[in-house]
Length: 188
Image (cartoon, rainbow, N blue to C red; front, side, top):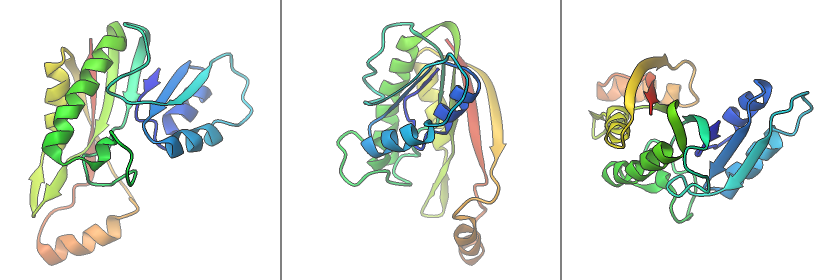
């Protein structure tokens, strides 16, 4: 299993708990250290966990070497995950982000084995009071790389850290909360 936006390490922990060999990559060294700490628990498994700093657009993996991609990229420049890391996609506005996600999609396609699956969790954003369909634009980028969309699952969000802030602003400025994300399941 591959997660090339390993972030806080949730996928790494779940892979270990489900006895899956795991490769976690992130461009942010802090994310890799955090993920390593989270995976330092005793658990009887033969599965391996590999965590390394790297760029999702240039994966250090062989062609068709991965059975499953399961990842949660940043949502363009909504939340910046670093201050100055060159290549951090969380610092890019939507148009540039989608262009770079095209490279990510091509790398996913390259490393994934034939007939295997790639799952991407992605949400939308809002700019100047208008919804920007980042999720479906990302889905299209993966389709253009050669993937076929197998499933679209809507994940409802509850009790998010910023919900109070956004709920207050949604009433004040008359907009609906974006309280869901999409889990796109693609097949190679």
